[in-house]
Image 1 (cartoon, rainbow, N blue to C red):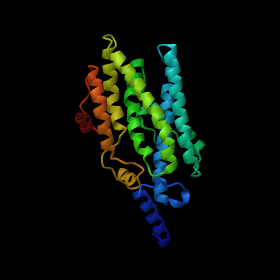
Image 2: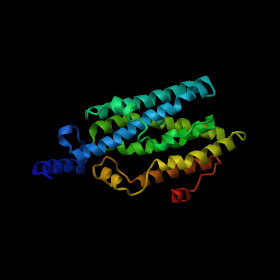
Image 3: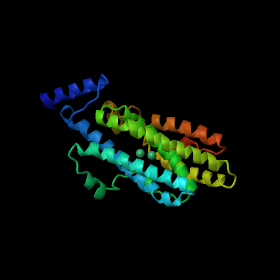
Image 4: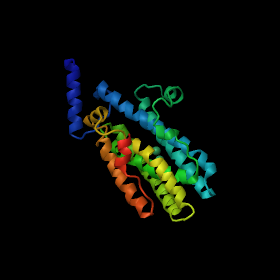
Length: 250
Ligand SMILES: [Fe+2]
Ligand SMILES: [Fe+2]
């Protein structure tokens, strides 16, 4: 490392340790930038893929009010994608190329799973938006100022999606005809959403945390999510898969 680069790194790390936000491209090192871009690109693609998953459910929703809710969630996810792609754009990355040519390269597997029924949709909504909400909480506190600010509004909307999933899963679980379908949807989605948190203690996670681009280990975030969904789903009379069994299979 050159002396100049070392100084830049030290100054940047000092700001990070003091809890200050980094605001300009001139104050960050290439290593920080690369790690930041990895996370931003992953989030932007997930927002877009999330929107695509909900689109068929504007038509598939059971009533007009729900069609509007689905359309609003699609709009929210597209807006989230746009906000994050705008942040990526600042680094001179060709975001059109990312969307059109590089799409699906690293897309999370969960977005390729088919949403077949309304029970499937609301369970996906329940589990996945909550998973995203918890993961994005780390981003809201991150050291990159522009991302941290963009996340404030995104997070609020994400929790509205979570509430929607919660209302519907509870409603279907209370209906004896629907309950088996919701349980089936839970058994289908649980292991898939559980995987989106990633493995515990990875090298990349350690680097993200060093730069305060993430605040917690993957496993810590997963545990918070699991505790919440377990309490809620059990209160609706559903059976939640044992997280340790699922993890040992991976
Ligand atoms: Fe979103
Ligand atoms: Fe969402």
